[in-house]
Image 1 (tube, rainbow, N blue to C red):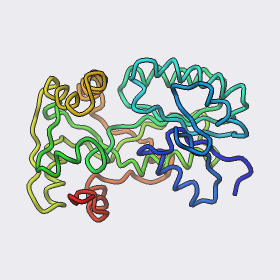
Image 2: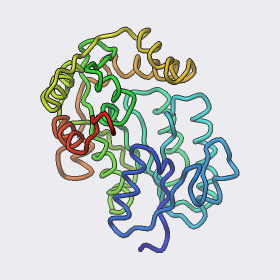
Image 3: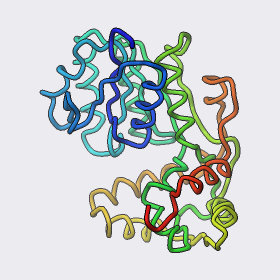
Image 4: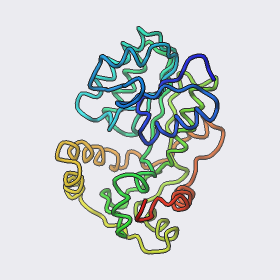
Length: 275
């Protein structure tokens, strides 16, 4: 095991949990940063920040649920000041592709005085299998705004692999890896892939951003809906309708295709009603 643990802020999240698993598989000691961890971490409680950073030289940082949430950028800036004082030697930040507030977060990390790597990610494929779109897919539909705007959706196992490489290998400091899948796909095309994999029709239902807001509000409340609708408006306006080479630059291989994600998720029982 390494002498100093690597801190994973958001250790129970979609990417964080995978990063923890992959680091530990490499024999790396990990300090989990989450509210119920052995050393608790809470973005809303700055008193937890210094203890979780004690003795840590590297950290992977995510902000749940998103850097677009009010106050997130300010908290990230305050956290980096504590991290600099604690002697953190490398911070890897998860950022959102095409998001205004995520870009602000990137600049904070760039100017923090801490050596950094930024991982700027496209939409997560796992939103279909373990996120807010899983239940609609179980019902045979994929309701999404954005019309026919294509998105280079990414398998977050690729994100985790990039993060682990940045934390355990040389040559990643100062890099910004914009990570996407290997091809542009519309949500209708994603629905077609899911239909093939699941062996039953999954229909893409084009909805307005107002309908999207209502759907999110019904399950997560108006505050959450406001933020996620703004993110959807930003990221599905065409600015992200191109692929990027971050996975190849970081790992020396191509990213996984959406069909590979779907096959793996199906085999793991992601769309079993009992899952």
